[in-house]
Image (cartoon, rainbow, N blue to C red; front, side, top):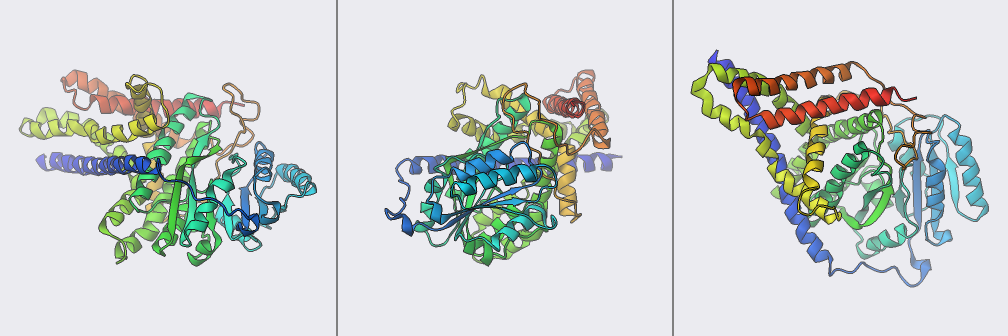
Length: 496
């Protein structure tokens, strides 16, 4: 039987090394980001030409699908962009099938009467989903630059004035991506924790990758493309659920530069319901795995890329596989507690296994940097630590859901594009229109998550029964995370 115990330890150790490697990569990006912020303090932004006739034409694309709650808001925000009217085109790429079509048409007509070049572009079907809508709109676009905003975004009027000048300063610049803000961060604990995680991506990871001249990604919205870059990279393609990440890698492999601007913020809405969060997480994680399957080989075969960029690209494309590693570690950790009582000769190995939580230590610096750079309260750590633990716990609680999405993506299993429903609400406690659109309900996966919460609670019981507390923090986080995911799933499914 010793062979089985060793196999369990080897599998657990491999997962632990994977999580540690991911954590170290994020820590390295934190160091690169810190240097970038210091350098940016003395680097002025390029200006627009004094003659507005020399400004490039810009097409603003607004892909929407059944967005009754927010479609008027995004139309109004786009129409309010401060850019010469004769050099601005707005396309509402409307694939909707509900009453929002008429609502949007009325708003578009209002702004057209005011002299805004705006049109509602309709397709006969949703072929290609968002990627198909963007490609369809591009065929009639008049701009040499293309700004894209999802339905839940509210760009400030000066957005184009802050981003367009960078294209004039660099002829090989293909994309300018800006940071996401959060309209409803304070709506609930769920939105607070999402903002906490996304801030790390936008304040640290994107900054660090860009500063190190490594690949970054267009985040699907809140950014501007050079049209020629889209066309030369092969255009929008719908063979992954993350068409933005896919095109980003094709463009950068083709030699185009990307620029990330953390100081320019595009506010957006966070999913306020668990079913909406699940649909978003599934799309991001499965799409990331699909993009890794599609491009990771090309990255490593490229003779033009330095080894460091290849390594960071690998960490970038496979970062969602962390959920698979966490899930497998969790499943293995409970039997490892039992095995330890029967194999005292391997006790030293089991003590090393108890270091699993320490593999997350480099992530503390990563998230703490984002917390500080976002002006977070509690610089002493008193407010930061609880938020980090809650975020890690919920993330672990989503490991079954997200891990399955990653595995289906790596396996090449096709699934439809499910967009994240928007509520248009930001006030805590407001629910008037929250459930206008649903993406799912309590299902078999929720039942499995409830069973996993009990399973990891059993690990807590064993820790006290066996007086072995090395994995206790890990099991506490897993139990709380899965219990919270189940709680929110049931609670939100029952809301009218």
